Length: 164
Image (cartoon, rainbow, N blue to C red; front, side, top):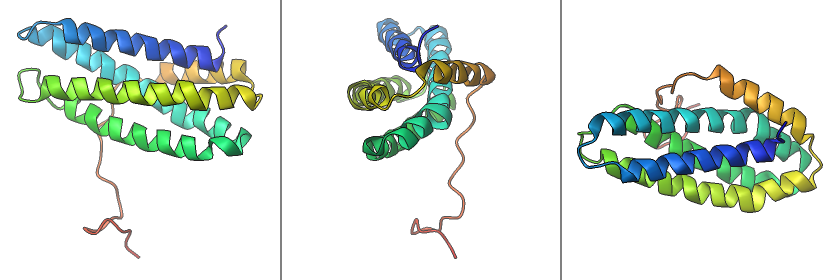
């Protein structure tokens, strides 16, 4: 059984390969683009959900050093989810479809670099039970079979501040 870090790195590699495949599709390969974009979005949703619900809380509680990094990663996930929702609501013939998939790929590549270079080493150093986390992550990912629509944040006024 892989540990949590190996499992998450494998996810990173798989999604990176899907983005490369997407870039190689022809301009008019609309059906293939839609199918692959949907697959990318689903895999990213599974991965991000498992990280946010299982991996990040474990790292946060085990390593004071990782708190700010986990906060930043969580914010990066929120931005990626917004792009995922936009892509999911589009057709591959739509203006900016390819651009949004490309930007999502670049965004994820940046995020992965930080995660693998900063958060994963801290998780290893913290002595987490990475085998148990891997089983929990895998089980959670298996439960997710669709990309939920993004809803606007609740309780925020036009200024962006929560209402009393």
